[in-house]
Length: 583
Ligand code: ZN
Image (cartoon, rainbow, N blue to C red; front, side, top):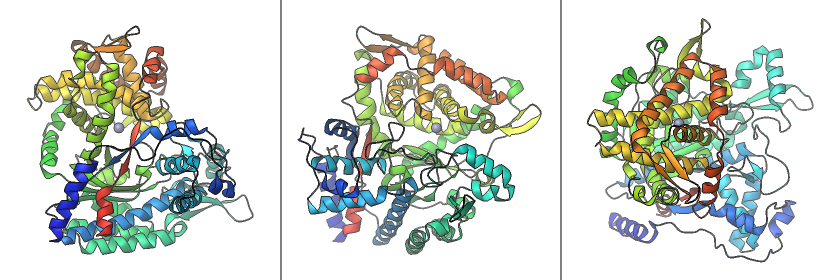
């Protein structure tokens, strides 16, 4: 009976909500007094119209996941994990800024009491998107309050600088390991200007204890012994502050209907030093058929590595071992990953030691990818492409390129020799590594499509579809900001392909056509150039390449301006998780 009720609910949800809805009514309104924000002493910066425009950049999208056939035990498993994920969410709010969570809570209370002004309603939704009062699409400029977001978020003292950090580390080598550790916060010792570190397990003790309890509860309902072992180890890591063992167990989870990521992972929120890890969670349901299909690509990887366009003299490098790939549907997410632009795929853990030892795991979020294809890529292609090529933009080419992009990160030079010394591409290319590595993954991902067509894995039409989708893909991701690694990398391939005659844009009609015959030679040349820069660890060559191809051309700017009616990204609403909690 319970299952039947669930089925009915899910069908109802699916029918009524599988298309996107606008979360906030965006009628032009008079500015009303901002009571809640006034009380907190905060000032809204943009006008009401600007706030509305910012809100429209993220379209509300409901993500129902059909759980028909899943047992009561599975549902209990998910319920406890959702609670643990909610703790990650609150901890991330604390990591972003010292006051954001307090303001957001006050606005939420105001909303429940029905006392928010139109302006405050818009600010409240924006804060739920950006996790704080700073615009993630605009280099963290404040939309509330006048001050700028500290580069080190709340991981370091607010007035802290990179120079001060580096000087302190140099003078105190005994503290280096703890200061640079991804799981500590840095603070002044009370009343002094001396630095000390506090482990996450202490700084966020109450939250992490609670999350550990939920994980241990969830572990009791796990459907595989490796999943149970991972959750218990991760609960211990929350208390001990040492994550390596549980990261290893995570890579080895198998035989489960679920894929779960929970804990501190990415370091992008730390814009000061890129050291400190942000809390996040993904709770997902695996798609075994699609996972099996994706897994078949792995059989080609060794041969592909041999054939990548890179001179023999640069092939003396080591690579980490192969890794499992999963296709999943996202049921719930929290913290870092839910802020701003939504993740479509990830490759974890980040700990190089673990990657060397047991490899890493790649996960593709099928329902998120599909939503972005339908809501963003397709409409963008209708604006920027000539009509006869629009139909070529296929879901398959978008989906597979995301996988091939992720696989490309694991190929080509990693550990290299520069001037007789062993180093990594990342250390050699420093601040240019992220955009160059993303460019490599994009270009090599295109190259892999051709390889897999030749291998008979893809139909021949796939290369043409990929060529056309690459243009729409550029316009999709450049809107995240050209300073951001993905925006910068896509700008470089756009200019490179334009120069090679692959993209021909007409300023009169404001449409582009893709010369699919020129695509492959340009892809091979680009992949070769980027791989060579990486293999040599040539910082100057990377800087020259970025200076040459990294500028926004005027015609692209004009076309981007014509995409204003299309959202930049989605704000996911997890309706199935909500139903689970209410059951
Ligand atoms: Zn990437």
